[in-house]
Image 1 (cartoon, rainbow, N blue to C red):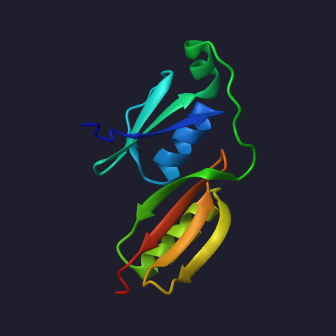
Image 2: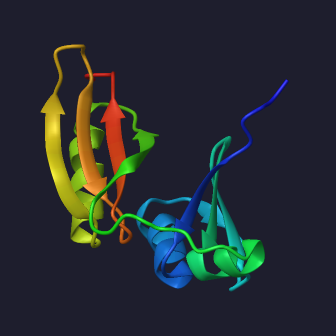
Image 3: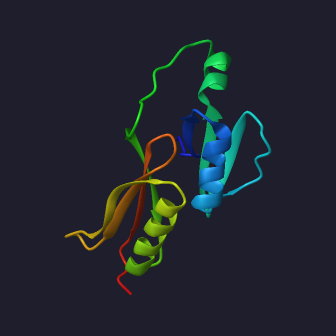
Length: 130
């Protein structure tokens, strides 16, 4: 049986992306410039590998989306609706691209979206009003 171990991103600029997820999104890492990075948020693991290094390793050339990337969504939960607004504002001020402002959805969730420096979509949301 397969067990999902991590979500991986192939990135243009490791330093920029690791800094964003560590310093802006609050993920933990011990990355010190190696070819790949592992970042943690509680039990979730995000791995990153430079696009060029991955192509060199596999001896293949890949195509990657440019601009906003609708291929993947990384979802971050926060404690409540007020924190959705606070975190959205914080990450936008820190350089994330605003995509969808905090909005109360008909299914009871407050949802917002930003994009990281490579254009990957990040959802910040909560189901808790208080």
